[in-house]
Image (cartoon, rainbow, N blue to C red; front, side, top):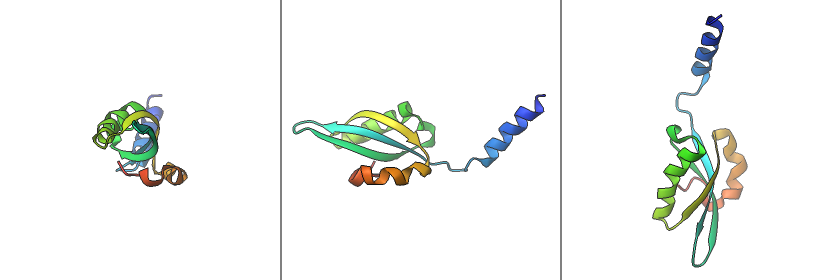
Length: 94
């Protein structure tokens, strides 16, 4: 009985890409004057969750005078094309 779940887990690990890519889409703002930003950024695989991406992106954005408002989601490369136009100049900028 234990062999089937173990075999399935092993197969799943073997089918994952070796260098899985992780991306996050986020919203940020600047004050005086108010400016809003929607962007897409690549984040490390070990930060591939909204909270992990937030920890990575907040300091990068702050260095350019932006305040991270929220990380909307994290996703793989399959989600890039549909977000590229919306992110505009902030597509993979950070």
